Length: 74
Image (cartoon, rainbow, N blue to C red; front, side, top):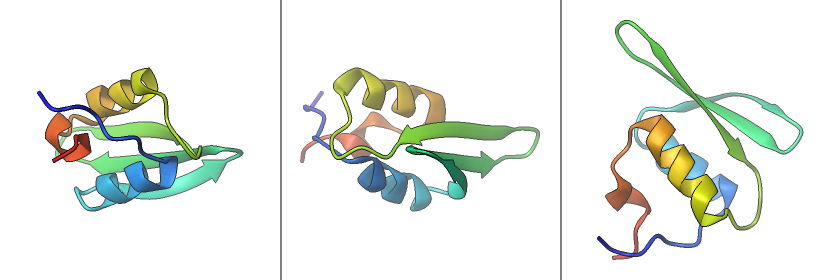
């Protein structure tokens, strides 16, 4: 596995948007991203910070169901 990149909240939202998520609202410093699937809706809050901590980024990856490779260094 490669190392995770240092990403901002906006950069993570852009990656998620390019993979089927859309921003539904923002409350304070948290952007709420959603992806509608057949029987369910995946909702992931993303903090709008300059740099996301590694644990926060891993939680976002796990909740979104996106492959980790999208967030790793090349």
